[in-house]
Length: 244
Image 1: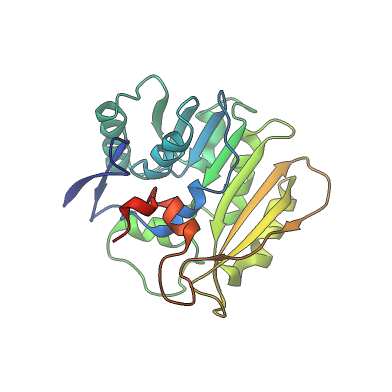
Image 2: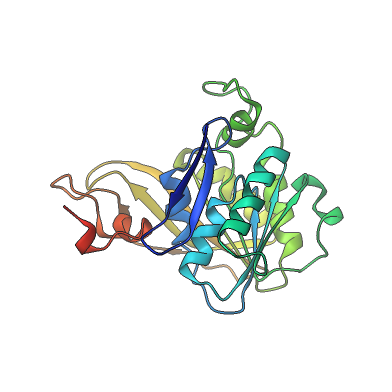
């Protein structure tokens, strides 16, 4: 079933389909990671129905964002989202396989690449029935190494790659980044609440960067009292006035 939701009052909206990709907290958290500035050229790698792209433009409208997505149905929904938001001049989508990224974009085309990748190795965990959901969950159509290689190709020297992943695959992530000449520069774990173990990890790498990793303070989704954390509220564009 297809849905339309606004990010915030007076802001952009997004389509999502329960048979394709459901909106997740992970995507909202990832959109708040990169430092954005006017004029950036951004690629949303594995863009799904375009939620991450819309979130980035909501945070900094004066950029251009191009998404790449394998599922044709998701691309059509993302294109409708761009039109409905009046963003055709700043937001576009290409249907294609990121493993063949050289056939989609020229090298060093973007300043920033962002990706919410599949977290699990093929055959691990529960297997989704829908092909689109299965592709988003597990590395059935592309591996972590292939995602990093595609990001490296799209970035010039000094360009940034931001992504979110699971802490149990942190070693795989750091090794894949460095193997693609993407030096990890920022790392931040996400915990459900103070005292809880990390459930996600946010990472930023720089193409050809020098070694040196800054491990930032944890991001807590909830306070010790069980209320949403300030950074989670910010990721969802919730103000104090919005709170009950």
